[in-house]
Length: 469
Ligand SMILES: Nc1ncnc2c1ncn2[C@@H]1O[C@H](COP(=O)(O)OP(=O)(O)O)[C@@H](O)[C@H]1O
Ligand SMILES: O=P(O)(O)O[C@H]1O[C@H](CO)[C@@H](O[C@H]2O[C@H](CO)[C@@H](O)[C@H](O)[C@H]2O)[C@H](O)[C@H]1O
Image 1 (cartoon, rainbow, N blue to C red):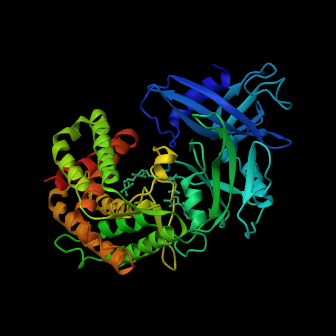
Image 2 (tube, protein in one colour):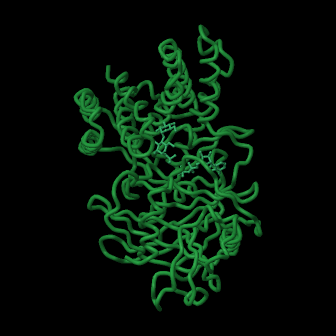
Image 3 (spheres, rainbow, N blue to C red):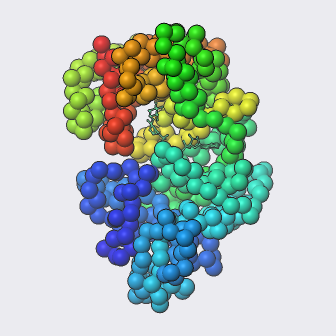
């Protein structure tokens, strides 16, 4: 292992975006390292392969290098470590740093370097191993400073002034990221943030070894006046909890109007996706295959979280019922990881973000056509989360359980009626399919919370206990 690889082995597990938390790293290799901008050897993009439990995941690291002692206070928090002089061809050797020790750091925090990335996308420079692309017909302001967005993210987003957000995809799969694919297909829609460009590099196809153009980052309009759907919903729930004895429609901050408009916006995006990208109607054996995948995911989740085991039979029954639904199931490209944190409310309405799908699934899986009810189920789960998460540690949680249930139910109904009114199929008329997708999402959440936020694990577990009753 090189010195840089040793430093990364200690640093990567501490990053919010690292998907393999809690599992020991068996091996870590810097698979490729490219200077991003000719003449700027201190900014590199690394593809790092991390081996855990017999599998290997690839991550993107934006690495900065400076002679040791020159990093400055502003970037001290981004330090990864110090590399001693490398022999020619060594891990971080290069014309500027070969002979002396150098500090290596997370360059996402270096606004001088990230400004150059924006400039390159604006220029649309595109040849060689790493290519910068500008969306046809768009022009981009340059010379802007960026800051790193803080929050519970699977990726890293850099916000430039009040104009753009550059999302660096951390976990890499060969191929274009569905977020770019779907956002580009929806360009012009009032329900998405306008795409401006992207950065791509070639990654070897795991089977053939052939180079595959892979999205490293996507540049999008930054919606500066937007408020996160989760924050809005959580505020409404808080208002309700602060008004003991009142029903959700009597307490201040009722969310149902927003939930209904969100349902309509979701239906419009589904309609546009179905127009722009392939659609199909699944055959019964494919439906059975989808149900089997749900059962398999349940098995994997139980192996990680044994508290799920008591509900296994009831969940399987719901998945079996889904397999047996005797009605055509239309499928299309969908959001794939739809929840209140993926939508923002602007002055003019709801905007949907992050069409990446479930971040831990291979791209080929995320590109698979699915029922739009899968997204509906995702949002319904999110209403349930919003209602439940503030019960934790609340001194009156017994008394609040009923208002929480009523809040989730009201917003569920409002979202579904907005969805149907906005032109989508009526979710309430497809209960078996909807329920299977809700259970499947809750099972996914059990695994997600166990890995990322163990103190939230009780939320999907409590929902499953209630749903499965
Ligand atoms: N274009 C945007 N405009 C305003 N806020 C955004 C934009 N894109 C993302 N955000 C904010 O950043 C958060 C995380 O973005 P997201 O794309 O979901 O990242 P991740 O895939 O890493 O979770 C969102 O919940 C939203 O609050
Ligand atoms: O936003 P991401 O693409 O990173 O999605 C992952 O993280 C989400 C949490 O940040 C997670 O969502 C779960 O928690 C939400 C509240 O924080 C809740 O609204 C969602 O319903 C719930 O699924 C998401 O599942 C995960 O893929």
